[in-house]
Image (cartoon, rainbow, N blue to C red; front, side, top):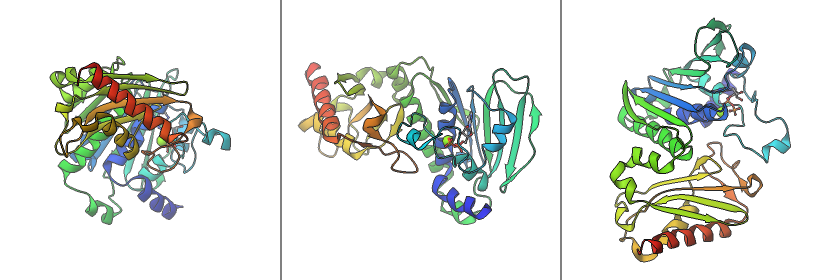
Length: 323
Ligand code: ADP
Ligand code: MG
């Protein structure tokens, strides 16, 4: 079991950023309105994710570390209608296999919270602790027992940048949730959670650049597309600053990216990449988010339709601005 955990951990927890991603997803699945992420040394020394979500009772707090003990998928049918971000029940078990983890959690109605400490796969008995409602997961000394993984990590600065990017992507995907991101005690960024995507973009890109963005909206019987694209002049020479959200989940999709690029047509300078934050909402039955353990890829059942809609909407937004 300990060995199985270590092996599986390698798949789920590649680096600090994958830890951050899993913990944020759990907070969002718990209905958090506010998620605070604190990093120490790029997450290598420490990661704390604190939320104001539904919390857990003492029993669930211990169960949470058992592999496949997810509270989110009850039947095979559920697997095809996944609305939560996590559903495999391996993130906490995997993280706890390669780090020192302290979970503190309290249900809103409960008199006190509970603390569960796990290190080297060994779960200490839960003990009461005074905390506000919600959950706080502290991950220390990531990969202390897997030196090969530790060695494979990049510099603190590089790992921190990846962690921050994960929080940024989460913030863009959920403007209705307030995100805090701090690194070594300094606030990197903070969003209000007021539900305004343009406001999130002004936090990430700066107010001036965010004002340049053009609004994109399109709706068909099956899909709703909305968000912002940069003017052609805002395009980046080095790499795309592209955010895709599908059903509230940050994803990467070369296909959707190409659909956006097609919408710009010849308006982009050669080797320049567009800047955008776009979201698609659609029936969960029309999209498969289950194809990769990291769940950053999706597959649409009507891929060509989706891409056509995206390309057309981008083209229209540019045309409306006479671009
Ligand atoms: P999964 O998210 O796939 O269910 P995880 O290992 O990430 O698996 O989490 C295991 C379980 O622990 C979740 O199903 C959930 O019940 C509980 N849990 C984890 N994090 C939180 C949180 N922040 N708030 C409330 N419950 C949580
Ligand atoms: Mg999870």
